[in-house]
Length: 221
Image 1 (cartoon, rainbow, N blue to C red):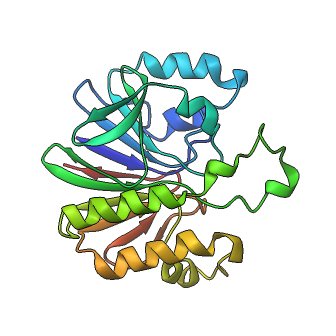
Image 2: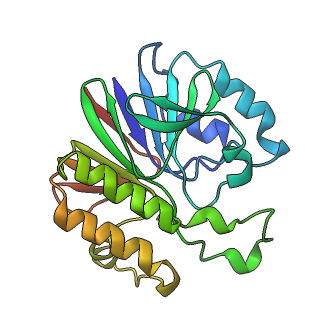
Image 3: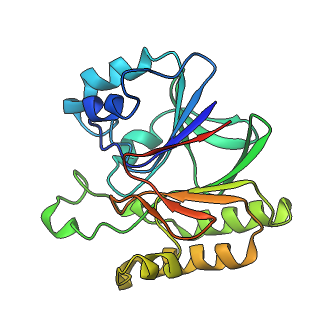
């Protein structure tokens, strides 16, 4: 079974509560749509150690509230067809612009988002320039999509396409416009079944294909 949920921000108890006390089993996979947050500072170490003892695998795309230098310090490897950072045997960062085949389903991943609260954060300590994709990551993403013929089963991101942001009644932030615009292009050019994203701390079904997740969990059989 594959479970997909929204931002966790390194809060263990709240993360566990989403499963109503029944944790996924050994062969299950939990995917977090950004702002995983358990690899941020020493405050999360004890809870991070608990996650390493989970019977299931925990995967995440990065959000904007992540410690990117720390994540990037972990070994990079190929896994299920795409590139990852192996954080622990059961904890995996799904890198940007990658395509993974998991349980015979394909997942395209594109993490990142703009931090509207960066004015209250400390550069290089609580927010990082890497929160937005680089030109190289955009090129990698486009090459990956071209290779698969612009057809995937699922898209996993932290940010949303521009039109989805507007349908939620939110004015897109100009500083995040490049990513939101790219995701809008992705939405218009790619054949996909479902798209899951986080970032906005709300549960919202945009249409029959796009879903914003926070604490809810979507199950893929």
